[in-house]
Image (cartoon, rainbow, N blue to C red; front, side, top):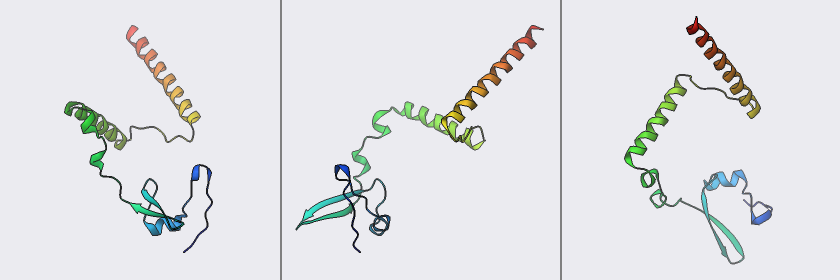
Length: 118
């Protein structure tokens, strides 16, 4: 199957979805480009082994990783129990929600203080 595509700025080319599917490539995949006999040939390539890239094991101590993992687990548990907010349609909506919650908490604190004083 042959398709004509346009060369964009900086030499970018969009490979049609159907061709990407047929070739088994997706966003972020690597392809090898070779110029041979007047043709440019793109060949899908497997990603370089992850062992060549730095990982958390290289940057953090065991104790630091344990602390990070505990924080992530706590966040996941909060989400599972419904202790989350949103989704918000826009940043303005999220901001308005935060301001509303801050006012409610300030009112609740004042009420507690007044209750202790009486």
